[in-house]
Amino acid sequence: MTSSDQFVVFGAGNLGRRVARAVHPVLFCDNNRSLWGSRVEGIPVESPQSAVQCYPRATFVVAIWHPSRTEGMLDRIAQLRSFGAPRVIPFFALLREHRDTLLPHLLWEQPEYYAGHHKEIERARELLDPQGREEFDRQVRLRQGDLSGQVIDPGVQYFPDDLFRIKEDEVFVDCGAYNGDTIEDFRRASHDRFARIIAFEPDPANFPSLQRVVAGDQRISLRPYATAARRETLRLLIDGTGSRISETGTCVIETITLDEALGDIAPTYIKLDIEGSEPDALEGGRRTITRHRPKLAVCVYHAPNHLWRLPLQLHEMLPDSRLTLRTYNADGLDCVCYCLPD
Image (cartoon, rainbow, N blue to C red):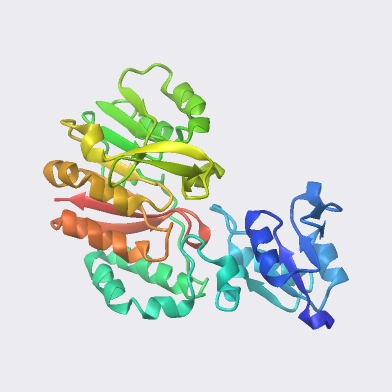
């Protein structure tokens, strides 16, 4: 192997280790000083600057992709180039050649995947308002490798004051409540004036944090379920903020439909951030949603086709609605479709 055939992976976290299994790098580099001089899966870790000095002709693969409002893939590429690295690529440039190792991974797919869904993509795009179409186009370009021109919405995720105002009789349903962060944002946005919150969170490790946020407020009820298309017993793969339903999961959980869980409760606003289970949860709440016509905020970045599948599904359920998109972090993370019935 010549030095020009060598790879260095920038980022020694979960994604970096996954990329390393594909390209077998000579080195990891990372901005985390505590990792410098250590080994990750047998591969040494150094600072980015040292890595470029040691391997100036290697291909550097940026394998850092996590929520950030201040730093994206282009910034990380620029960092390595500032140290003199002549060849730097993002991890998703490897998808075609290393599909079996790197996919599935949230919104990412091979570029040709999108050409095969052209008609659905166009149908979904036409449903969005003008601002939503602009963001949709940016997201499509991103998924095909164009990192330029991204827009990070400066507002509060799920509570955009340019789209709607929270009312004092709001009944908020939080699917994927995690540690209560969205509940806290809702309480601030509503000035703590609301009728009710029903929060669903299947990961038992998150419940102590949720209970601390609730602090005995009788207006807030916690449900230890995942929302889905039907009642089932499934497995949850524990992965911090990204815990998700998976056959490889070690935590046994129960799912429930929104129709069953809410019964006669009339929600006014439903948020879905449930790591890829959004289409099933919508279907499981079809009766409730079509009857009560709540506002909805649905994450569309957990699977490649969710960018168009979920707007199409929302339009089918609530045809007389405004649909738009907002993205709250760099590189496609936390992209949300808002559905606002007339």
